[in-house]
Length: 442
Ligand code: PFF
Image (cartoon, rainbow, N blue to C red; front, side, top):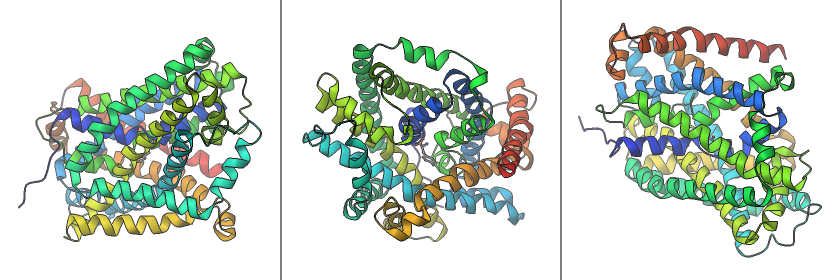
């Protein structure tokens, strides 16, 4: 059998996973849902969700991949033996990555337009009044929507064509630049507006501000941001050489993903608080009010351009991790070449993405069907958490202690192993069940 290609180093593996984890979820979604849910207490619940539920499942996914050395579908199939019903995990994973990438690429494309327009000074004329209508007209322009979606899917496919080598090359360039850019933009925002109010907002815990809905949102977002529940981490884990520690990698991924999310708040909140911005429409703030405010900073035009470039980079390192599970499935399952697998997968996702691209005003039919919103809701609220729930059960109750301890480099009676197994067998599934029941009752 041909030997599986592996990451060149543990650091590159961690960087690729952090690249997958850090994306629009961190820069666009986390700041606004934290804002809507009142700050400190929400952040605390989110941290609990990441470290007590998300990380154990992340570790489970990477372990499954490394043990089986295959794409998500075939990994689960291989480890499940004769029990066919577990294959639902793989099928669900394929569905989720397909659906998420189809609309994620559209939003990622928006960052390209904002980047180009910022560089050429075309955003300079925007005011607080005109920025909303400008954004509205942009997302309703079919040519631009399809065009940028096409560019983003092509960039993603170009990287995935070369498999792990392609991902490593992209990640080596994208991640350090992303780190520097986020520090730079946060530094400029803080030096103009100060950070006291932001820190106060993020770290003053007041539980009276949290609602049941907020708690659910914190859990749902924890899965989305860690890229778990859809097989991306199973595939990335399958390329991880056996001599490195999975546990350490998972902890690094959890910490760095959280640091990037908090840094995004440190970049965006000082501007919101300092300028007294009206944040009623907080979900589209990244493309509306913020674009006007960024221009007011020292070196505004360029800081604004850098900002959108940063978001584009973060999104690209995530889209590659959404295409890889599908391309690797097509390649390994149907035994076709990587090139064919990538092109077929990317084309089909691009095609489905057209419905999302045209669903914000460009086409009456797709707009009335709310394709993008519905796909986002379906995946973030249902298919990802259900996928994560099944992975927890599969790894917790089906996989043998022998496999798990070997993969984790622990012994059966180690406290750490006991704790992780307990989290994945009992705590995570139970919390997820409560989440599902609550959602159904709503
Ligand atoms: N984690 C990414 C983000 O926060 O933007 C989104 C994502 C990427 C989800 C890859 C799932 C995935 F497999």
